[in-house]
Image 1 (cartoon, rainbow, N blue to C red):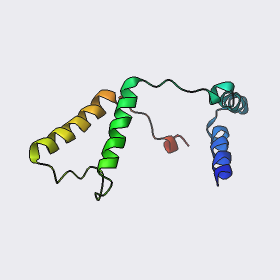
Image 2: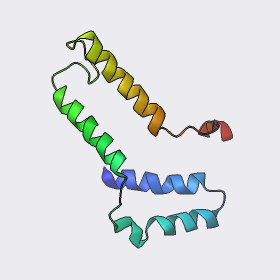
Image 3: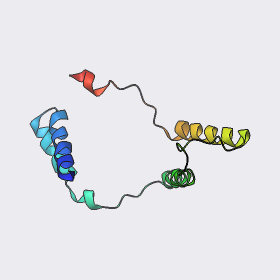
Image 4: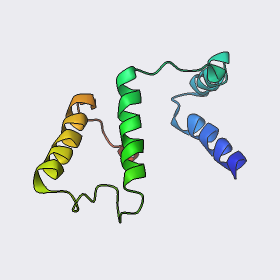
Length: 104
């Protein structure tokens, strides 16, 4: 199953490329030595990921992870406001991009 997924991902490169030369260049760049290097993530991203893992673990028995109905109103509102703030602060808002399938 992993081999099929890998083949489909590589095929998408050829499907989306403007030319065969561009697809070859992209494939050659994907399989460079940088594929096997360890990335250096930002500390803020690691902190947010750790917070999400913590929330997931704390809410493991809940119907869904944002079910905070067991909390009093003020902590619940603070939690939801914090999540909304994270989306606004860490999100990348750029000009609207046309949906990929409308290009064909």
